[in-house]
Amino acid sequence: MKAIYKIAPDSAYQEILEVGGGKGGLTPLLYPKAQVTNIDIDPAFAEALSNQNKNVTFVCGDATQLPFECDSFDAVTMFDVLEHIPDHKKAISEAFRVLRSGGTLLISTPNENWRFPYYRAMQFVCPSDSDVMAEWGHVRRGYALSELTELIGLPCEQFCTFITPITVIGHDIAFSHFPFLARQLLSILVSPITWVGYLLHQPHDKGTETAYSWKKP
Image (cartoon, one colour):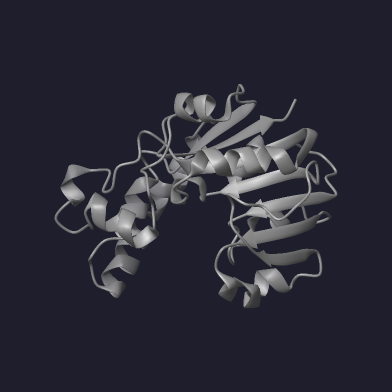
């Protein structure tokens, strides 16, 4: 959220489309005064607490066939979703179709540094890359900035990395095969290192994920 807040415009958006928001509710937290439409392919998410917010409307639908008129939204968000969509080019095209001129597209995704586990020393207790991608439903690892720029066809306005080489230690422990109590204890032990990593991290420092903002001409 810190990275997303950093790249999100401080604008009084009134209507926002959240693509693949599921039950996360990130966009309403980001813009609490906006009317948010959350579209997700899984109808079960309609019952999620975050989708019961009076400012949120849940729609079951496909990111590559958005059931909305052109120029309908002030902003479109796609947080940790693009890497799950096989036809990502169509999804981006649809996002820009429903976005008003001057509107903002916000994306977060793993980047070219995403490797799991990040450190070789953790490989014996962590799932393999292929196991993680299968569990999380990824159809691709993620994107370098150059790959997203080519996909979108416009220069990126702002970007900010997160899950850094320091904070990823706690991330790897959380997803390891250690027993639950061992993971809790290890996470507590490394928490000072994690917090130092958060405090020292700069927006363009190396990280394994990135939040981006793009503007429709």
